[in-house]
Length: 330
Image 1 (cartoon, rainbow, N blue to C red):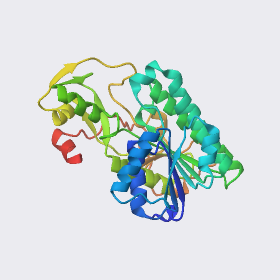
Image 2: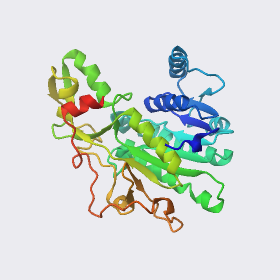
Image 3: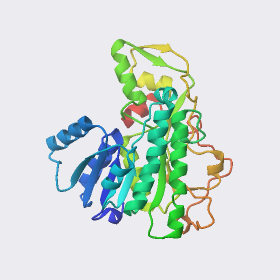
Image 4: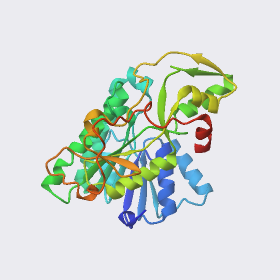
């Protein structure tokens, strides 16, 4: 991949101590082309843990890395952190579906108002690119988490209006993907913890979910940062898995307790809604949803075909991973 877009750039990651943030920062360090990498997060203990892990591996370079304590709910702190930054990857969010169903205002404060703060800070400080990390739950959402991430996507895409007034203004784009294997709080982590008791829970035997590795999520983000023009949404081509097969792979000797679907939970996830399909191009490895704006000419995507109008991208309508496939993936 051409990495000239990162050369001598300062990159900031909100939620930089999360599963994605740590892997992304690790990749940036290994690439060795950035001028500075800033990890922005609100948990000082997780920052300490991340620093100690990097120190242990000989990667804690104080001239390259900057740990910045702050919350995306605090606009003035973001403005200070974004000073001199070229690229922002916005990964900070509240993500636990059941918890957010019962604490809706907290989800709105972080996922919606916090994202608006990121937008305002980026515009105020002259950041060149902002990329939001979104979720399959934002496509036709039924739970509050998905709804707040859809709002975050809409806010980010609408912020490109400033770019039409002033070409040097910030470009805002989105990546959207499904479950990341082994990420903090993921179903894989939950099952690994539950299996210690010999009993694991299953909500519905027919349920399916998209899956990808953390490395795949980092590859997608780097691709999007290179290709983005503003308002475009980048979506990976993912396989899915039936949850009983997932349990069979992770906890084969455990008893299964059926507990029923939780509040805000879907039987199957989707990554493209019907409206988006009509303006989505297939690049071979990824899908890119074009903006529905008059100014968009799509010159950089003209060689890629559009998806057929009847295309469906749901977790029960893609390649289904077997137990053996999943074990190879991890």
